Length: 280
Ligand SMILES: [Zn+2]
Ligand SMILES: [Zn+2]
Image (cartoon, rainbow, N blue to C red):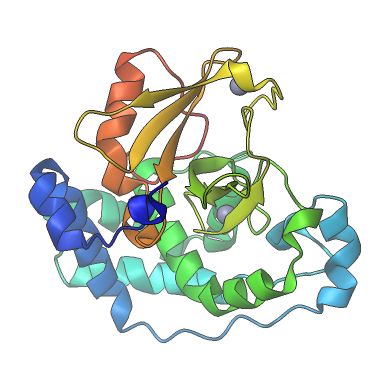
């Protein structure tokens, strides 16, 4: 067997040359990143993991644990600053009106930033204006704030004690999966489309309805895509975009880089059960 078959080195530029229809999404992200770049970011405080271990074993994600008690208030301020920058720097022309509305709402209404961050983690109890854009910008702010903590959490946690079908950091359903290695030691990881965490899951079966029957999950090859495919479940009709390879996780697991697979899946009547940050 060719061991190197699935080791790839893809760059964003090459990917966009191959998929020019993704360029507007890349431009949008570049503009938001530029607007976020000069916002000073307080470091997320490391929780006492000894206090959290019981919740972790019980399946409570880090950001939802009262024992970990991660303070997300600085992320609220980052989101408000990001909206401020997007509004004042006249970027995101297509979304200028939406950005202004969101900025006014978050800077004028007391407690609104807190409610928005709670909504990002729990999608319920609140119906914000322009939810697609707000979800994207909110997770941009949250992940910038949480990124050092995510690394610490990653080195602390024991993958074998999680193996659940939702993100150990934020609790979201997986947006993608990745197959790593070769048999017999081949492993599957799930990837969070919101906070970017990757975690181990059992190799076979559907992570959405937890059908353990491997015959229930079928793979759909995509013409022209060597490393990406669509796995779908015949029990619940959900699909999971899968990266079969290693080396270019930043490109292949970014979710937006495979929006064309979401279209193919939708055309086939399959359901996306994970949040998307790209329903703009
Ligand atoms: Zn997550
Ligand atoms: Zn299923």
